Image (cartoon, rainbow, N blue to C red; front, side, top):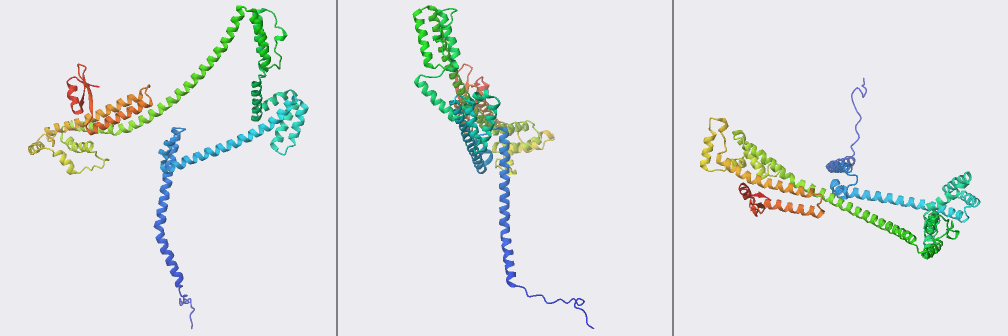
Length: 483
């Protein structure tokens, strides 16, 4: 009796493995294992770059919230040396694109206005004839340009509804056309050179003025027609009438007439002087505003630099105050803190690269003679817990003298910083004064550090002299004052 193959768990023989395929898989696996660290490193670098870019973008957002128009230097400071130039270049590209688009739009608008200006000029040359206007506009309505046809239709509709509006519309279109304005300017210049300038808008005022001049010699009498300026009179016509009137005034030679002429000339002179003075004051005010902006920017920069200089000095003063407070306690617990505090502000402490270890601290506390060591040991075995100190009285005095010397330098630095701040805050200070103040305070701070600094003292009798810093307190105690 036979059994099925499934019951016997018999399988057909597996095909022979493909050695080339297995070799290729092994090569691919090896390459993937070699590339994986490189790909991971590249991904980390890309992540770091994106994080830096996000920080720069956040910094720029904060900068623009504080100042709507920051300088290029501020942008480079916030955005960094790589992202900052890219950002500035993108801003310049956007501004150039905007300017190009605006220029193209202006040219298109000017061309459109000039086109209608030519039509309006033709209507004006036809003495504002409604029939000529309608003919020109209907021809424009047949234009292939939809915009031209649309505008022509609108103008024609307005004129048909209100024929009296033809002249104001035509004059308005002429005034909006750059080309027509340029042509009108050329015509005006030519007329001025020829002495034939239209004075239509001044006819009434000139006639009234001439009437006033006439009434000086002829009170209550109307002025003759030959003195009246016609509606289309020009400057030549006015010159002619003026000369006739002047001849009559000179012939009369009355004092009243002469006073009137002098008053008119004086009024014109006063107006010219007032106009000149106004222009001069405007220019002076603009220059003053420009200079004030320079002074304000200089003050902000100098003040920020001074704050940066003052920060470590303030921190040093805080450490000295803390040390003096510790030293004044006169108990064992305070003595345990004296060495770290002293090393902190004398050698830099944490954050300065100087490591505080037990050997360094022991050298500070152990800076005494053998007899002082014995005295300290006896003092340390005192039955009074508050008197069992590790610092001897001589050490206490020496430490106070050392700290006092450092404190004097730091306080003098603080005084110099305050003097510089007062000088920068002076409303009359100029940009040159700001530079001089910063140069002076930096030089004095450096001289304090290198030991060449001297202080100007004034004796009670009024005499002054330069004294080293370590002698200042001695003379102050004797009545001298620091200048």
